[in-house]
Image (cartoon, rainbow, N blue to C red):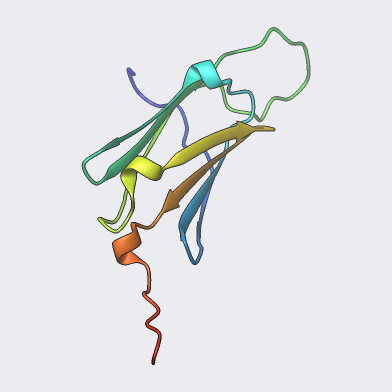
Length: 107
């Protein structure tokens, strides 16, 4: 991408199993979105295409966006999943089993 025009608002939540990332992407379709992991970086790229519309005020951004997040080595990169619905991208970043607490039974 030539450059970004905006940074989508993003929430990162911690769960017992790992992390969740929620990103507001109104007007973004799945075909205009790319999510990848390179080493310890989660990269999200996309484009909001301009719509033909008439109006008085427009606040939703249009153009390219990119966000990069450093992720822990405790994340199971092969188990990361992404779901786009109702203008919100939700990524699930589960911890590797070796990073989860281990319960030991006392006999």
